[in-house]
Length: 574
Image 1: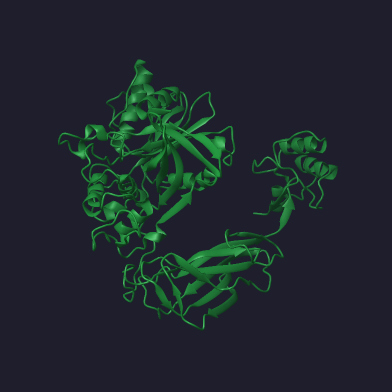
Image 2 (image 1 turned 135 degrees about the vertical axis):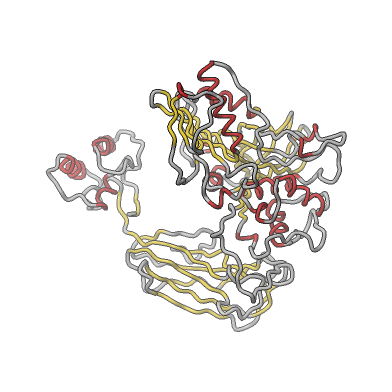
C-alpha cells in the first residue's frame, strides 16, 4: 500500500524522539557540536554542519554533512552542498529505516520538526523538500514513454555525473533526453550509454545522431550494472542495498499489471529501504518497504502550460509483497489504484569520483560507436574449471585454482583481429609467482556485447596460504585500435586460507567435550594458548572473542538442543 513520505516521516520521527536518529556520511573532518534540547528552538542555527541534539545526554538527532568528493558532486550547484542520509530504528519494533538523497533543506526541516514536536507536543508535516524527482507532463508532448529517461536523469544528478557534464538540475537533464530521443521505450543502461558515450540502443527509443557523448573519456559500461530481480530479488538486493548506502544511484524497472493483465513497463528511482531486523539479509521478509520517486507521481499537475519544474517533488513509501510463482522470485507493490508493479530489474550507477578510471592515452579514439572496445569481462576465478558463472575469492589451502578471462566487446563496432592476453599472479609482497601469455593464431570477430575467452587454465604450482592478485591484460602495447585502452586490464584480489570447524577449540577436527574443557580453561586463565586462529574457532556467537556464551552454545549443541549458531560449520580463517 502506498503511503506519502510526509505521513511516514511524521510517524517515524515522532516515534524516534527518544532514540538516536542519524543523518550521516561515511567520513567527515569537521568537529561535532553537541546541543541540549533545552537550549535550542526551531530557529536555532548550529555553529557547524555536524551536530547532535541531545536530551539528558541521549541523542535525538545526529547530523553529519557528507564530505566525500564523489558524494558532494551530487548536489554542488550553489543551492546545496552535498547530500545527507538518514538511518534509524523505529522504537518498539524490528524495523530499520534508511533514506538517502536528502538535501540541506531536508535536514533543516527534519531538525525543526523534531524540536517543535518534542518541545511543544505539536504535529508536523514534511513536503516539497527538494527531492530529486524529474516529472513528466500531463499532455503527451514527447515524454509519455520516457520514464526511463526521467529515472536516469535522477540518478545521474544524484551521483554527480550530470554536474560533470554541465547540467545543474535533474529537469535540465531530463529535457535533454526529451529533446533528443523519440518518445519510445528504453532503459537506464542504454540512456547512460547515450549520456556518456553517445551510444544508441539497438531498438526502442532512438536519439538524434551525434547527440549525447557528454563525458567521452569514460566508458559507460564501467559505471552501470544491471541486476535481474525476477530471479531471487532478495539476493540481488543484498548487492543493491550496500551500493545505495555507498552513494550509488539506483533505478528499478517494473512490469505493470492491472485488472486486464500486463500493461507495460515502467522505471522509478529508489531512495531507501525499510528492513525487518527479525530476519537475516538472505530472507525475503528482510526487505519490507521501499522509498520511491516516480515521474508519473505528479504529472497531473503539469498541464495548462505549467512547467514540469514547478511540479511537486514527491517521494512515496511502498510496502513490498513477495511474488514467488511460475519461475518468478521477486517483489511487487501497489504503484497506483488497482495496479501493481513487479520489480523486474535494478540498475545501479556508481557515484562520480576523481578516482574513477578514464582514458588518458592519446592513441584511444574515444569513439565506441565506430571503434571496438574490448574489456576483460567476465573474469572467472574458481576451483572448478567448468564454472563460468561465479568468481570465488577465498580458496582452501591445497586447492587447484582456475582462471577464465573473457574478452567482451562493449562498443557498437565489431572487433576484427587477433587476440592476445598476458596473465600474472603476484603475492602480497608484489613478487610474481605465476605468469603466462596466450595468443589466437587466426583473426577473430567479436560483435557488440559478445565475448571470447581462452580455455580455463590452472595456477601452478598450488599456492600456499596468503593474499594474491591475478591480473589479465589485453593488448598492453596498444597494437589494436580501440575506443579505450584503460579498461583492457582486469585484476582480482583473492586469498588462500586454511579451514576450521566453528567450535573446534583445540583444532583436532572434531567437535566434542574436550573443546568445552579447552574453552573453560582459557576463560579461567589456566590455559594461555589462545591465538588468533583459535579465537576464530571459539567465537561461536561472532562477538569478536571467546566468552561464556560461546561455551554455553557449544554445551547446548552437544546436548542435542537447538542453537541459533552453526556449530561445526566449515569456515575459512580470516
